Length: 382
Image (cartoon, rainbow, N blue to C red; front, side, top):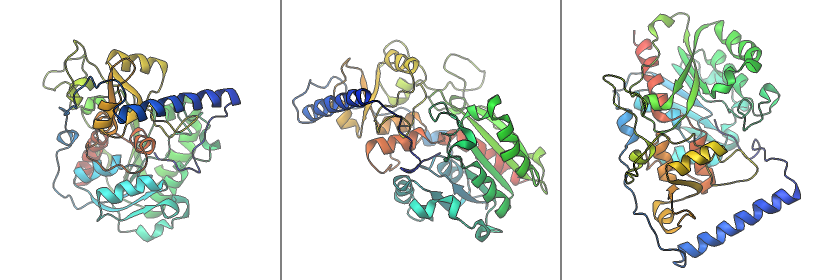
């Protein structure tokens, strides 16, 4: 779910729009400089300690002997998921170098191909035939998302055919591909059938799942679509979609704990109400590099209702505390966004702040990927 500078597509802005954005950016930069220099308003929030540890949503399973190859690895959402589910890591491919740097920093013993070496269009996948049990990855979602203008196969960032090429060449026992639910809109029906389902169905039974992140404990509104394939020499009947582990904050399912609201997850004071965080927007899509994770006007209203400040996300909690938001709401840090996305808060995201946020916003919430990975592992074990 990553993209590179080559694939990043800024909006076509007028001179007036560009000037307005530049003025906003400069004003924010100056305010931040004053705040961090001790010349801004006095801090109003204590540094928080999250209540939610996302790793508790992904109990570490014993090694299962299955080997996984990761494509479009990004900041590691699916890689974390499959590792926690007991899979052995073979290699990761990621064209965005800062994201590849994150994986190297987090797991120095992993084989990680980044930058030009991570460009999947250049890889001869036959080298992995016989040595990989599962291929997993999230081809870039921009060709299908509203933010990416939904040009489908007419978008140079469409990499689903490359995922299909890897699977059909390597012939693993199973595969998992994920993307945005918009891929299942009617306008993409022919694309999904001809470019994904038909070529993969020659040797695989394919299931399509749409799952909600909060159903697996992630305190954020986010849906993902998963394509799960099992090689026909096995049995797709052994695969059972993951059952929710949590009920939604406003629901009550007997036997299931409720998914935490965003404020509770972040360990913030009770203000009388709480709820799921809006979908964290990728900062790598839009008219400019930004540290705002707001995806829409309605999302902005929800963030405000939660009294969370999602514009100008700070690199650290200390800087977030020092840089008081205009309405004195709690300014989010990168570590806070990691928790809301289901990442370990100490996951060593690399690159400038907007790049770290882009890695989070583009990622599969690891607990959601973990649920799918466990279901696949259980099916392959039978």
